[in-house]
Amino acid sequence: MGPYKTFETERLILKPTLEEDAAFIYELFNTPKWLKNIGDRNIGSPEMAKEYILSKMQPQLERLGFSNYTLIRKTDKIKIGCCGLYDREGLKGIDIGFAFLPEYEGKGFAFEAADKLKKIAFKEFGLHALSAITSKHNVASQRLLEKLGLTLTGTTILPNSKEELLLFTIEK
Image (cartoon, rainbow, N blue to C red):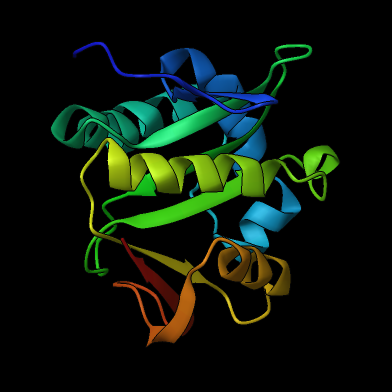
């Protein structure tokens, strides 16, 4: 495993999610909005979160140099959410996504982190396009994707799912 870059915005540190973030990932992945909008990843303990990080996030980080980033508020070093670039099965290209603990939603952190990661994807990682998916009922996520410059281009259904998701894209 190589040294992976950490990025900063005005208020946030974006660091690759590692084993040390297992308790936070367990908490985030079990929030009501995560379960409703993203889906149950069946992470029932911090130990299961550690295994998820090692089996799902680390391999992509090692293969592509980017994956999920834990977002840390600079003022108090609290982990507040995640944002990432994902090589997701069933989607062409790289997908950008984000999620926050409920108490940190609606404060502009999602746009700040996702906008930074979008710019990094194009400038540092050499990507030429990004996609994003969201459920039809998740209007807040749809608005944020549009604010980031992504355009609704259709719908998609991921493997092993029945839900039709909205598909947004942006090109460099």
